[in-house]
Image 1 (tube, helix red, strand yellow):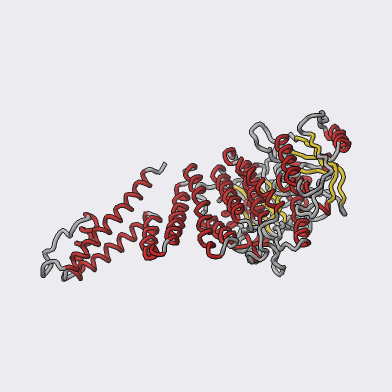
Image 2 (cartoon, rainbow, N blue to C red):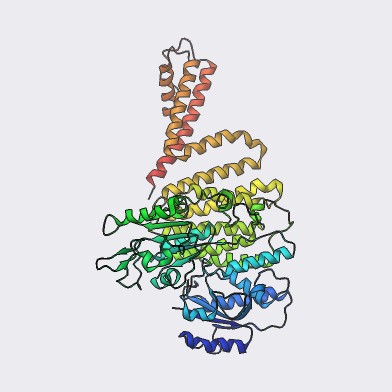
Length: 618
């Protein structure tokens, strides 16, 4: 159910928009209703930025949120009286209505914005006319490219004022087609996270509108992620979409996805995706459908199209299975974390990729920080309410937007946003039954290392390494709690091992005299990594002490030393027998015995820790 709000600069324009609501099948908004928001001010001085922005944010938030205090996704529409798109930037030199709108659009990515009058060189997707003639596009992942427009204009304004910060602009487009909303949002956010504005298609009406034969132009999506069995609630029973190719049905009628959606016919120029993947459980009414679809993708997409099987492997697992991490230049290790759209051969415009900390001598501009702080506040408010995948993805988008708006230049705020981003992403993966029980943590840790390393470059030079470790510890502690809450035992242990390593690194850096303890701490980290690591180390320690006992005790064979080694380490006492010693125990032998007892105590403690961890596993 759509919920309409009106945002206008005067009572006259507000009433004009209000008169249009009955034409959209909605009742007019009565005077005094909180959904009718009017911003009237003649003062455009910069001092009014904060007060005006916070007033409108508060008004929109109160009018739009539901009883749970959450803004529902793909339901809120704000009708705006007018906008000048060429001035729709967040860093306008003079505070204006268009500047204020840009800040609000960045603050509320869940809201669909429509304009009564817009000065533009070409038609835009956000006209009020589109509400009556088209499906409501999901704005959370910027399907209509409005936030992309705001970022582009903001970059122009940043360049104009001499600031070398450039916000990442997602020029690539992706579409996720799935009747299960949880899969659609999870896969859609994954594509958004790694650099594409994303269309979420969860109805036949939307699919037909985007990929039907009404428009002869190509669909323009760089990446397609499609469910194989599309059982949309609004799809007629006579339409069959299970097979990708066009084929003749039992009664000779044409069927198949390529027939009903010509823009998904890979044999035509209308289907111009670079990557196309079929997300499926692999089940079908016959044994040939899956192999037929796989052959279809292989024929037209070569190694850039194939089935990806459910249950999902999480965000990083999906991207890994699709082999999209190997894309040259754009998605390489440091770039894939940024959302940057720098293509091979193009200049690297993202601030993160320029790697010139302190070049500008300051953090992110004040207006961007104003929005970033609000996004973080809104995201944090969702943490205790994120009991569904959609809400977790919503929180992740808010945190991602905040992180990108800081340009990683304001490190404290950026770390806060990065922490929330990973918390919501892990929550989404843990809460969704469509994700495998075991989630890949290796690439997430690589992502955290890359991001914290980049952000920490904006601290003072001699504090960079410590700041990076502090940030990693901050993030790890929160992710460990989530894994523990959802009984992700292996994932919790893996991140506990990382946290132990970071904690020891911080401890060693605080005092110079602690440095000699580095090998010992690293050894115990290896012991705690897994029970197999512990067993390997114990075997190696027993063998080493067997050699020392043989030499110190002057035993004739290695096996006598092995006997004493085992008895000392396991019993945590002196060797059980000295009968093969040719003389009274010497000082060297006593030292070996003492070391064996200490090693036995230490390894026994680690063994008890492993045993307790295994027994207490829920």
